[in-house]
Length: 171
Image 1 (cartoon, one colour):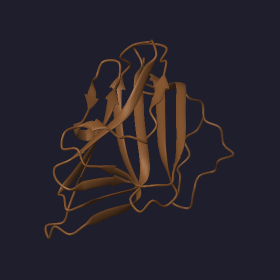
Image 2: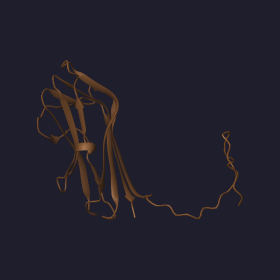
Image 3: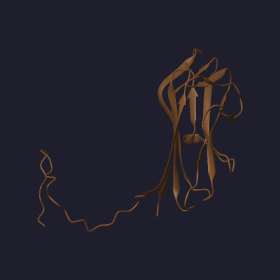
Image 4: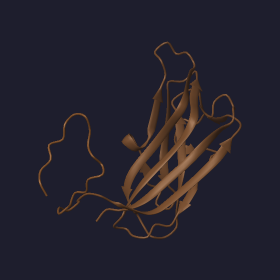
C-alpha cells in the first residue's frame, strides 16, 4: 500500500489500512457490577474516626481471577459540612478490612473562614487494585470529619449514590 500524506483538511475514513503490529497494555472487560441507590434525605456524619456511612448501599462482587484488576468507583451528587474543616471518605473491603485511601479516597476541605461548605455536582472516589480473591467480596464506604457534621446528599434533595466496579484482564 502506498503512503498517503494526510493534509490538515481531514482523513478519508473509507480507506482501509492493514495492521501488522501488536497492541500491548490494553485490558479486556471481564465483569461489570453497577448499583444505583436513590437518596432522598441527608446522611449525616459526626464521627471523628472512620465508620460506616449508614444509609448508603454496599456492593458485593465475585471476581473471576486474582491476576485481574478491579476499577472501583462510587459517586454521589452532593457533599458538605457544618462547622468543620474536613470530610474524608474511603472505600473499604469488608472481607479483609483493607482501606483504599490516598488517591483512592476523597478529602474535602473547608474554606479558611470556617463558613459552612457544600459541593454540588458529582463527587467521586475511585481505586484501581489487584483482585484480592475470587470469592464473594463486599465493598462499603466509611467516612469521618475532624469536627462538626459532614453530609452526603446535603440538602436532602433527590439524588443518586452509584457504585461502578469493573474487573479487567490485564495480561
